Length: 297
DNA sequence: CATTCGTGGTC
DNA sequence: TGACCAAGAAT
Image (tube, rainbow, N blue to C red; front, side, top):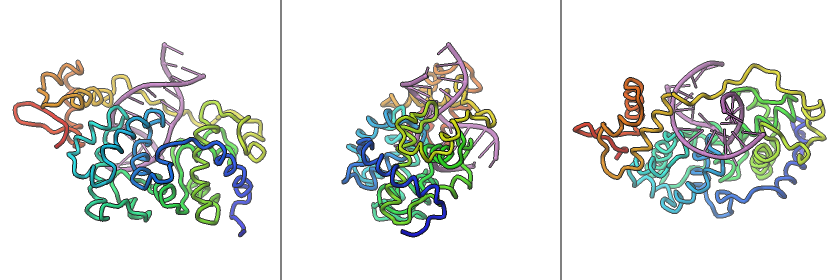
């Protein structure tokens, strides 16, 4: 066993891994034979959408498109339609584009290299590391909001992580990584799961936590958050709400929708026009002749 | 680095 | 009850 650059983190490895072995949720994309495509689809859906709402859409999606080539053969609009109400529908478009890139550039198989994953549409630092680690068992720092929160508390001693991911977060996660590959991969998913189930944002369940004895924040008496105010996400009246309404109509339509129908979605003309325009610009809506619209073909 | 981008559940 | 939160990415 070689020395870790972060002895404090090394003390967390065994209890966190033991806790995960006993408490991990059974999720379809974690089943032994799930495969990299399953992991990839789940990661796209889980970007800012809770597990409970992802599950049904995920099952439908994987049954319909069990391989990247199956999705790549479809019109992008079908991906947007199947995305249903998961939110942020550009993710559906990006997943579809990623499937086509996988077919064209990787022989239809999800690539296993981090740099190749990162080059796919909709795959950023987190998702590339997650796929490489969860699907291929590689050693990567998988830094999502759960992991940042666990480390902020256990190692830094603050109630909440920084508002946006920082280079310091990444460095800390790299330094905390176990040395050997399979252990690092289990550690990545285990720390995420601990953040999702125990070390939660609002009211952490410290009585169920396996590392309170090592947690800097807990040992300091769980001091409250004292940083800058965290910007609340307003939604009512935003362009996002208007876009959501327009797209909901188009998702449910099997034939092109006349503009007059879309006009009933929102009272303010200017904002409605802007929302429709950005949907078209984003590739989420196709304009047709005679003022009709539909999901992209 | 700050903004934009959906949707719905929770306390 | 409304503010906060949820496995981020792109710009």
